[in-house]
Length: 504
Ligand SMILES: [Zn+2]
Image (cartoon, rainbow, N blue to C red; front, side):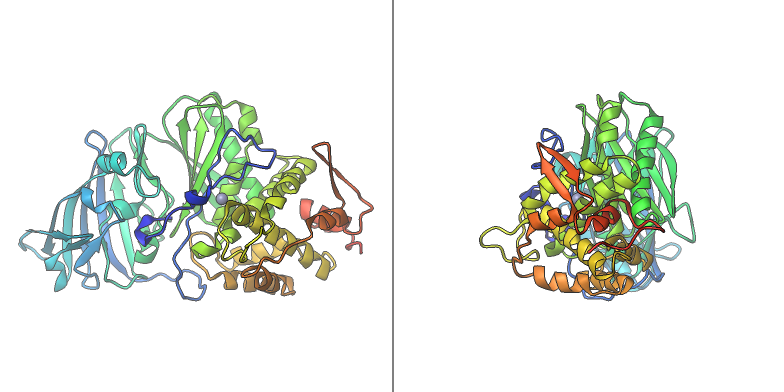
């Protein structure tokens, strides 16, 4: 989430979900997805809109400065802005009318706004230098600008001066030149018209994905329905580049197995080599594209990658439309609930271990005294595990009402098929409607109405027992004679073409 919107990231409630699960408690795995402001608009597929500005940026690793030249149509405003706190690092900002011989005049900064007088009356040009490395050192916030060794990470909203009074659906296009040995990587979608450039709406720019400059090793990882750009920052790792690429591919395969395909035509996975022997600490930031950012420990051995769940969790964030901040539970809940089953289906974790994580974690999601429902109780337990509980109960109920012909994954796939992904913002009610239409039963709407604004406790133990999930001695065993054992099998492995109907 971007601080420009005046909101704070979910670190306040803790973004880890390892406590109370079989996950290593010593390795906090922060995970936060970009929450968006409430925008009252229907969920529509992206429609290309008019281009209002084009930027050419040049990265100088020696000075840590980005030089920017930009050209705007008459539709742009004379006011320009950057992310909150980022404005102090824009230097020598000048503007001119876009015609031969027009003079360059200094642009005055008034608080957070840059007023470019020549842009008030027609097409204009801007030029400036942005002290990005200095900003990263001083701001030190991954969502705005942060220094990661030789890498400088900063979404484009930090260093692209954007028109602040132009219609927000208008499009901006940027190109970035880097000297040899340095790379520019971003999760922003490439321009469909000019593949060497990136296009983003002014609206999406304010939540634009993690983006970085530095000596990355970059490769393309093909996935079903799209491709992932894998960028690994500098540093030695205990495993090979091939092993890392294989881990990314396997994690993406878990997502495509559960969802039918990857939710975005492209996405960036940015890995930063850190100290330690763990893989984890992931974050996802999306808006007009998507980036998953994960730290990998320099001493992490192959087992740490095999056991990792964070990358799948973060990739599942890419599948779900960005909803309002108060509904973080929906985004974190689905990533928490679907991750183990996605990994089971890709052969990355056993069925027993997948259920063990849920059986141990879900009680954290039950309402405590004073709970005011999922939309209004913003605790770690309710956001991560309360959200997981919502999707779990929904999955079982959809399967019960459809004689196990449909499950939650059918609802989720329908959302992705309708163009829903974390690159776009949808009202949560639209997500629920699209899902319910796919399964033919209004389970998501009804459950949302029940759980959004009131505690709505769930009888968890009887529910697990009916599914034939039993916990004893820290291990999960399955009872295939349980009344809903068929539903449990379908939740775990998906509906086989020849799967028997649900047992009642
Ligand atoms: Zn998450």
